[in-house]
Length: 499
Ligand SMILES: Cc1cc2nc3c(=O)[nH]c(=O)nc-3n(C[C@H](O)[C@H](O)[C@H](O)COP(=O)(O)OP(=O)(O)OC[C@H]3O[C@@H](n4cnc5c(N)ncnc54)[C@H](O)[C@@H]3O)c2cc1C
Image (cartoon, rainbow, N blue to C red; front, side, top):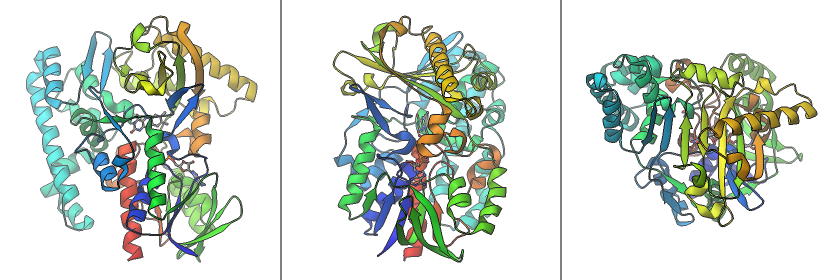
């Protein structure tokens, strides 16, 4: 039997590609090495507490949002319940403590009230954002072929060119001179893993619109429910999903087109097209059966910068975290106004100077925890190199030291937290590496630097006819919304061939 498409990996990109193809009647086979779907974005439970393994917030999930529209188009909204969010986050800086909702006018008013001397610049900056969004929408919706669209960009979409060639830090500085204000406006860098002066303005602004301009929602029961529903729907469409099955090789017809995949159990499955949601490096340098091509890819990909990794602590609490200060479901803590300094502090494991992200999903959905209890996830960035060479004993010891330090830092905002812990789990960059096979535990694929974002992003097309990439490593990039977009466009590329 030959499938229309084999999908390697049931992360967000793989699932959304599989959903689209199976809805259109294509015969698909989804192969996932883990026992459950979702990749990084999955949920897990311990002693009655359900935790999001990675996700803090996902944009575009409210009615009218892109992801919500995709789920509605594919029947998934009938299988899950959405919980609308009232606000995005409480954001703390030394001397500033405020709540961001999903309304850009409120955000602008708030910034003007805090920095009245920058009022004129703020208005100019927000109208530049609006111009960019309008041009970006016209660009994305244009019926012209991509090449032609790009050729006319300097004249028709100058803001796209403009934001493609600078960092978000540089972009904001054109309008704002106050360093503290610049830091607050670019606070969302923490969702993209690169400080504002290195982060592509183009990518930042797309994500910024997702969180600061539109309402969003959570999924009742956790994001794992969403991914289970997608697998269920794929099955109802006639597609097949196999878990605990890793792909080891992609067999080609002399490197010209795809033929089949070989799994870790030695089975071979044939397909007309293959979409890989496994990381791009494994796919293009380890899986493909063409040593020459693999070595060319190895050279290219090894020169590319991988994104940062993370350290996460999952706490089951004997009471809701609101009781000791968790005033909102998310609190973003900045120790200062120089994001590069707090990023570097996280990578050095200097916990008194690094950023912190505190998230309490049980505030949105109390069914995630036993009655009367609470939960909390503490996150900061980290480096794989900090953990790579530790032996099992040192690894365990260091993990507990980091847990203690981060809990102590969090107690500055949530006094008494350590006295209420019933369940404790932690994930290091090594966990991130192992769970989804992400090189160096990178959590957003390749970094969103100017050189690796937008049209410079690793293409979803490969040198092999019928082999496509999806997920955070490829276009448009990391984050759940982006990976949904990536899954849909990989499915479109496969559909073109299948026609
Ligand atoms: C700590 C953390 C916090 C985050 N916070 C947020 C957030 O708040 N909001 C947000 O939008 N994004 C967030 N992200 C990013 C987001 O989770 C990812 O960008 C997204 O989930 C990646 O999806 P993906 O399609 O790239 O698939 P991945 O999650 O990378 O999944 C790939 C899948 O392929 C499988 N696979 C790999 N190799 C093989 C093989 N050989 N055979 C079969 N299967 C294989 C893996 O097991 C996995 O299931 C966070 C990530 C992390 C780690």
